[in-house]
Length: 286
Image (cartoon, rainbow, N blue to C red; front, side):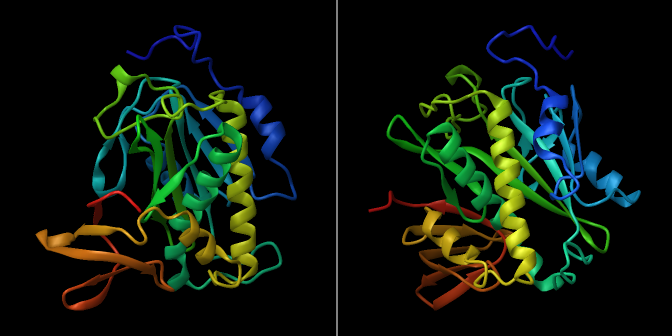
């Protein structure tokens, strides 16, 4: 049973009307914003709306997700109002903002773009250094250890759309963490854990990066997305193990992110790009 919005005074509900006033407008990316008390998955809900013709810029926020999903279909769960759980609908396959459609082969940069936008916004607003683990896990330092506080899931929505789901642990306490390797902004010493300004900051940062990326025709170099991602990626320069589809593994040094957003790993057989899989950091960065 979902708890009352006021059952935990340290976790007040979001103010949907105030959020709309702050981020929705005719000249911006965000065209609509809805907050629901609970749902299974904001990504599933927004993907269904996209298939029904929802316009670009729709934002769906949940106070609680009961069947949230991360990458590789992993479950993502957290107490009600303890984090940011939301999805946005983008339509890079349509002309918009005076720009032509972005070629589909460049859409793979969207989850990385979302990672850059989210990490930048959280670092500035919460005052917590936030790094990226390829492709788009959000990392913070807690107790001297690198831990995951959030992640991003991108899913195709029809011929022209992509739904980006973003989840961030904001106020989770130590006893509420789903796994020992997880953390939250609060546990990392965040100066701000009020979800309203955090969500506004992430949405504004995401809109800025998406607008620049679209204006560049999706070219990650022209909008400096590739450079910014590399600068904030904690995976580069590390010894890693890539757990690939089909049970295969690849170990080596993560040396670059290529033009398609793939992680390039230098191993015994030379450099190989990895486009999908789970990356394990084998030793701390220097």
